[in-house]
Length: 278
Length: 301
Image (cartoon, rainbow over all chains, first blue to last red; front, side, top):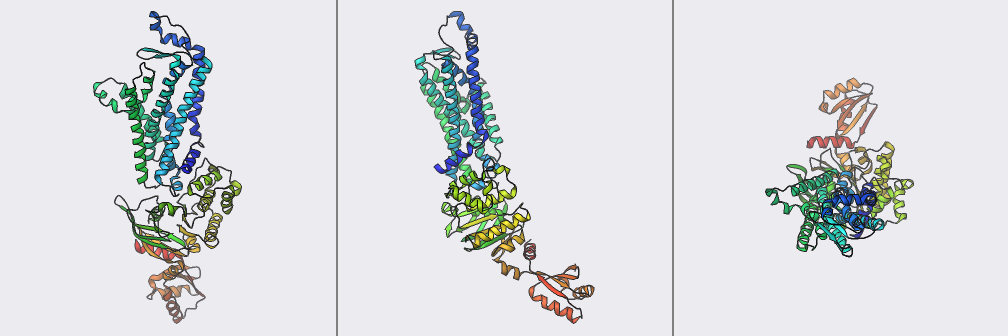
């Protein structure tokens, strides 16, 4: 297994497209952090406009933690696209290039090959979330310091600075599970087709459609909403509620983990039975 | 070394391979011939476990492919159709990664050795996307040698090569057998290539074996083209046209005529022409795999 994983990682990290995600985050996050440093207080005043009519807000609220939270929320809908670039290509790319013939005529079982590819795409996904976490938290703290996290949703929650780090760690952990779900869906689509554009587009289309269905407040759609994985992908936000609704987070996380396992097993089933004709 | 029995592959209602039997002995250069769509590639893909048979058995090295896939593939090197590689990697890196999957010795010395065999050692650091088709074919052969397999399966290894490249590959195949004592299965559309390299062969059509045996036997068994040169070409053609050999007449040549004959018929035709007083300058039988192939596959069709 380690040999096959080594080969898969070498292939993934020899492709230019693999680094698009890292480069995008490495450019985008510093730009956001610098913009927040320059004009964050204006943004923050606008966001808390109503609140400031009743309360006086003092302290360093536009700090590294708050910026990291804002970045987390805003990039969360874009990172899935970066995830699919690798996961959508990892199987279909072999079919497109005709290289299934090269690897499947080696003394390596298809189960090992599929598993190694799944691990390689998952490691890339985990790496992407870690880079996002390190850049947004690291740069945010370095440039804006620490302080309370101001969470503005339907209500405003202020998390104490010494209560923030573990929440970020848990939220990024949850984000890894969410992104692995996206990666798993793209991986499954990748096993079905022979062109890597298809899985990337299909996964993004599903995320967009499911997200829209989740957002429309119509009773008939409410019945299917709990079954849509996109509905559970935003569960990281609950880690910034006070108190944290653990049962809800655990349920959503379990549903996502179920999707990950189901997608992997389905892709394995398909690849084990597939006749290699390309 | 390879024993295939009653092999069958269906794609829906389409029968790609239909009860194929074939046997490859150790040391053979085994030619695998058939017209387009005969089932050659499907058979080779089944031998390499890329495609699952619908029924039948494949035994290689005395082991069943379904139950001993891992052990069998460890001892096989193969090119299947086009020589596709990871174009964004160098030739060296491709071989290193593929060698790692095969459990081969991936030391620089071994990789450079096989690149040297196919004449690509000076281009080891070039990305494969810069390679010509011929260079990719040679790299394909290099990757089959990396793990020192006992059996090498080459599916259309000279497709797209220029005449020099074809000669190089042919010599390489002969040296694989003679010098490295490898057993080679060679599928090709290029009949002279099989004729010049193979020791045994099979011809298949519509997924079935038509004939299998040594190349020498097959060449002797079939009809052959016979060119008769004579100063009296018109008289010779008229004599043959009015004889029982009329339907063997293929046409006029520059100095006579061409017939398609069984070996045993040649003396009878010569006797006929001599008895009619026709002077003969030469009688040249041309044993051709092409003639055998065309005859057998047309009969099957």
